[in-house]
Image (cartoon, rainbow, N blue to C red; front, side, top):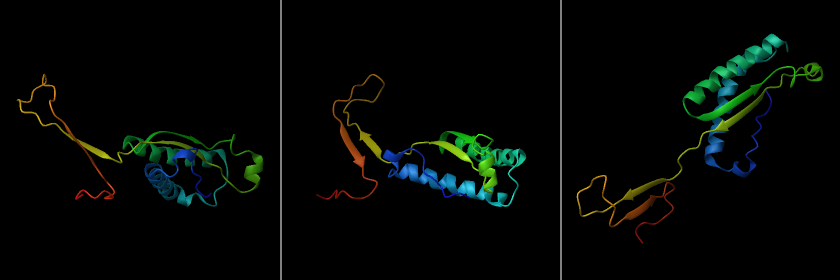
Length: 138
């Protein structure tokens, strides 16, 4: 199996969400395709690889881990010169979902009864620091 190549999100490659999703999909791909070594590079084998990976990526899509994906494993990326090198090329394009990295808690202090027509008279805004870097004692 080829080494995993990160997608074109160069500006976001340090983003924890992107790295988490890439690692998740990479591990799933290795599990799903692990027994495909030493197979003949035929259209049937490429269809089986595509079907297996499509099934797994569809699950990740339903779980909302990824927004969308596309798999290419056919004659366009497996021409005769690739086949002669005893390789199967599988191009997978993934659009990862976004995680919430910060949870913002808004507390509105209002002396009146709370209903849909109330406009807040006072407001307290607090962002919870997920990394514990702020000293709230100060």
